[in-house]
Image (cartoon, rainbow, N blue to C red):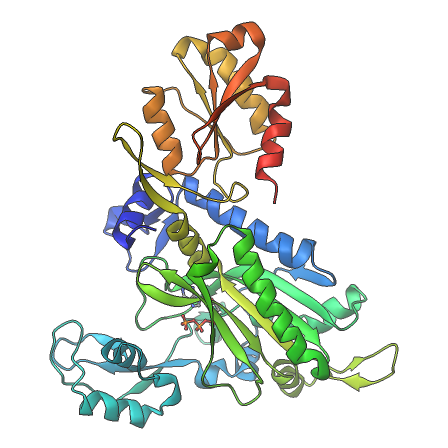
Length: 454
Ligand code: ATP
């Protein structure tokens, strides 16, 4: 695993992630995925969808609008209480989250989640917690800062309505509960999944793409009977971990972290944390949500959310087990996990990204040994690119070209040499072992397919 600085540099230089609006000196905490990064992130999203929709029993996907009727956010509680406790430093005028100040000062030995705003203020004053920017200790009181971005909708200045950019994708699943249940003739228990953008006006964004103001979430809501909900919660805890292991995470870099403070409607909640270069931090959450969400939507919309069990004729509002993971936070974890610096025989060093082949941005690099082999190499490239993301490189020594592919984690390099013209075979080099084998071109697609299968 590399340091954050090394990963940020590699991301910029190798086309994974660039600072947003860079030619205008950027816009703080916005990031653009480059040609290599977009492939990585898309592959991660595809792997997740495969596990939680395609291969899952009784799960359905939706793609809801970012804008929703504002009553949705009243029902969900976001307009009233989706806020962070912020404090301003009176000396340097920077803004900070009180809970983060306590976490950092106490080295996480004190849990601010269990404190009221008054208790957090007391802790900060009693312990003279300094401002991380200027070192002084002169704070305003805590004020709750709503994290939702708002905008207005309407064609005349007078008729403008306040609407919000969704701060989570989950409500798109809840408001479509009845639609999905009816149109798909779904029977409880069933799941609704969604991948989409969410927006939060975070008080303290940062640490590269770990916490940003615009990000993508991958969420799965499991609608089940109350009496099965705790057992299903355990199932989703395991499924969430298994998914991470299946895309190549080392189990020693992952751990469960139970929430100390539960919402009044919840019976259980936990995160899975990953050992980022900045320490253990949340990667995803699994939350038991009781029947809170559907009950609130029933109350605010006036539409019945009762489910009629066709076998027992019971009528009830299902409970929900929520599993939510940020696609960007996960992509960052994948980058950290994959990063490796190796010293090779002969003293050379290489940076290699050990991505699981299924999520690697490019599956194969096609490399003609010399430029006058490019016609044959392009033939191989065209054949492979009908099936996979493939890259082509004929510039520089073969050693340098291998290094470039190692840095973007391409699992296989195919070299075309003069023998290829005679025997229609190519050499394939494995990214991790650096071993090489010879294979007829007609077997190539099948060989690569097996290697990148997920
Ligand atoms: P945190 O405690 O880190 O603020 P959270 O508990 O508010 O996260 P949830 O609301 O449960 O997070 O969101 C689910 C997931 O969405 C998180 O586990 C994380 O992967 C991702 N996520 C949340 N906020 C952000 C953000 N600002 N930037 C990037 N990803 C985020």
